Length: 94
Image 1 (tube, one colour):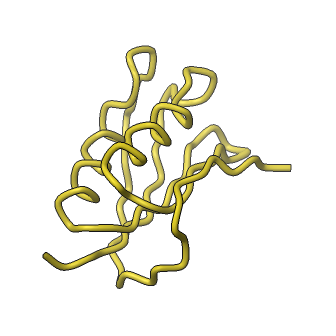
Image 2: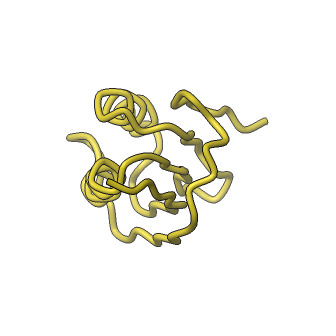
């Protein structure tokens, strides 16, 4: 199977509902690498890298999020796998 990369921006009620932690846990369980962070404008941004099927599952997860989230839109940008990370982490915005 081939590897891929996606960069997503998630809109809606997605901050303060454990979205980042749920995303991290799901990514780690699927063997996906990358990161997730809150943005100043209320969105969540994430990069997923790994096997195509696992990355597709992560994109699908962001369309719903954890139980308390209310996702209204997800923008997805596909790109070439870079292998820049070997883990999945939560990034904190300063």
